[in-house]
Amino acid sequence: MQERSNLGRPPRRRTSAAFLVAQVGSHAATKFAERLAPLGLSPPHAGIFRVLSANPGLSQQALGAILGILPSRLVILVDELEKRGFVERRDTPDDRRSYALHLTGNGNGMLDNIGRVAREHDAALCAALNEKEREQLASLLGRIAEEQGLTPGVHPGFKRLGGSK
Amino acid sequence: MQERSNLGRPPRRRTSAAFLVAQVGSHAATKFAERLAPLGLSPPHAGIFRVLSANPGLSQQALGAILGILPSRLVILVDELEKRGFVERRDTPDDRRSYALHLTGNGNGMLDNIGRVAREHDAALCAALNEKEREQLASLLGRIAEEQGLTPGVHPGFKRLGGSK
DNA sequence: TATTGTTATACTCTATAACTATA
DNA sequence: TATAGTTATAGAGTATAACAATA
Image (cartoon, rainbow over all chains, first blue to last red; front, side):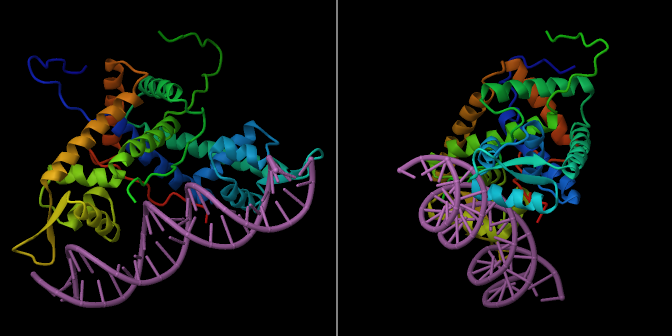
């Protein structure tokens, strides 16, 4: 039940939605990274798990394109996951330049852990809201994401933020 | 008017609010930085303008504490703004170790430009929502921000995001 | 001895270019 | 010649330590 009496006064200056989204979003990303850290993973790692789970057999190029990660960086990330036995590079018969990336059994186990962590993270972040309000929030943000042309399920990361020098 | 018929089926899996906040927030931060770039400013610069406007005479320590910017980095940012005539370091009579930071006339002019850019940014980001929905969104996010202990008006930036290595 | 502003340095992430092996 | 993966390198942001002047 919001107060609706603003008669005669200039519209009350509220913090802009854009600023709040950036502020809370940055906080959310930091908190998620903190929850991932005990698993020995970073947010980009989690993105790789999620995308490979939905699209097994992707090449590194394709995976990097989806996640917005440059090939030169993706190599390192995949190396780390392969070294720990979560991802494997399978040779492709038709094109011997590229690999087909798959989650291993251990990889799928870790994917479950990531999912659990993500749900805990969501619950903690939205603690101030009831279930209906969380759906409202997700709906509003989902509409913005769609109108802005954001790819569902892909966190854009941060490109060039510095603008001064 | 949302569909409300989910009888018997498991609750439909929606993208979590936490993920959407991080995704849209990252996008918003990138877009804001792009709008700031033609002014020769970065988001941290804009934060300095905003905080100094509300709290003239702050020391660098105090300013850095509010913005979550380390002294070693803040020196460089303030140097840049001082060199361009937007900020001045005034000697303080009582403590000759520190400066009192103030916006100059040109600085206040640039502050107006930043405000204009911020309003354009907000309008563009929320294009998918009507005025009432924007207020709803701001209200929901504001409650999360408060419950999570975020300082009003302060973008936390991104601390240690990597967790793997 | 502690604090303010500053400098120096290391580490991470981003971005570009160049190399190799295939195609 | 073009592409997939890889390596090397440069640039920005973040973090820590150390220093000079002052408290």
